[in-house]
Image (tube, rainbow, N blue to C red):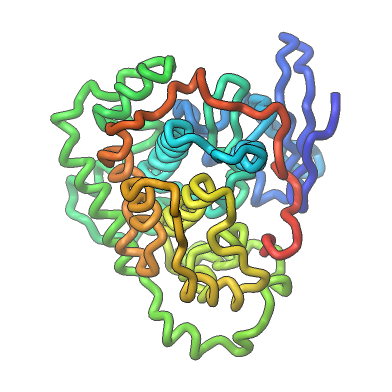
Length: 374
């Protein structure tokens, strides 16, 4: 029907599937590794209501992957742009509902040890009825597949190895929120008490990985040959290797964590948590938190800037501060934030059906503007 997006690694079309007349998004991944990662991640996350649905996929003869996805006409970037036209910005209840939906999607990723690596408002799609869904997993990695040497006791290692799909042991507050949103309760709480130890294991695993791979910024900075080298010179290639090292050349600059900017290759899901903090801040202020024009400028803004939120509550600000922590080990997990008291106090999160959903999308699946790309 029409092309709705075009970028370096993918073209996206709005099409009608002839077998049932369903309107879907046809995403042609122009790079093999990117297509493979999208498929692998979406297959693991197919039961999560806050992850974009992949109906099917196929491979073309030229090895390009084609994903058949649910069609979502707008995204969080459009929500932010629409709010800029109003003096009041995004109402508190709406902000909380958007935050909760993002947290659920990220929690599902991290419970499956999937790190997205490119979280930004343009990759958070929104359905016509207000359901937010994480999309664009072209840079995602499944950390379990690259860490055969992770040290854990036998019980915990066995649980993590068997853990696939969206979890049944999700927190009680999340099930209640699903029902309040008018979304189906999928019975995630069948074994809540039995699995509480698994919740703790996961939390400690995330924290441990962050501590193991925390970047020594001073040493890193001293090893950079040209500290003023712009990130525009990065080559758009797959720098991950099979031994567990990851490329630092991922994501959108304004949402990249300090350890990525310093060139870390041993990070984990905590890089997503930094991006999440930047997204939350932009929802509160309608302005990017760290709009750097180069990597060195980005680091400068991170180390010097003290964000101000004059019209927001201390609880809302605390959510951002718990995520935008220079030390990766200190960042709150999505699971922890889902149980934050801020979401259970006045003003309560607005029901999904009452969210303001723009008709048009903003910047999804297109190359980002200058200053925001790698």
